[in-house]
Length: 202
Image 1: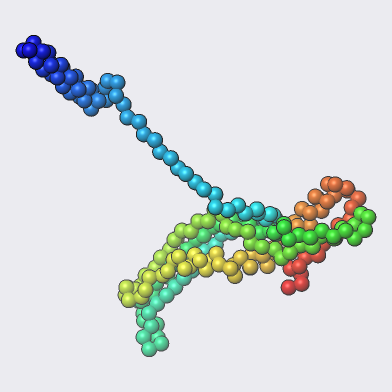
Image 2 (image 1 turned 45 degrees about the vertical axis):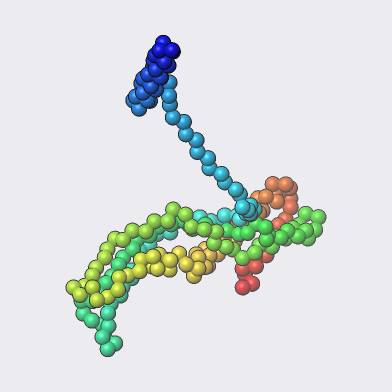
């Protein structure tokens, strides 16, 4: 009976020592133990939109915007309260047309008319803004700080987009005619192509 009890105790001691040793080895990064980890990233596509935008022109825009504010008292500007900011900016503007709205009409055996919708501003890219000069008067702390995000928004807002289209309207028409004429004449060089630009009617 004593022999059996001694054997059981010995087994328990050996197991305890073994487990302790394995724990030390695991803590030191040794032995047969290691760590495993697994991560998952599940994405679900909510919608798919088919885009048929045709980029006709890409403009490289750069400029400097000036913004000034000051405090007033009884309608008079308070000397030394002014704040001024000069913001340098650069960006690329893409102008083009919605290709899905372009209509092609056959006028004769080898004559086609292409109706082009109004040109569109298709987006900005490579947008960069940097403050180059900032001047504050001696008591400018009485004047609210210039809202830089608002200035940036005004530079990139809808009127600016429309102005880019207006300033480059002739180039857009020329590039559009070259683009679609090239497609049609690639099928048959003898086809005559005429254009109607809806922007001419606005």
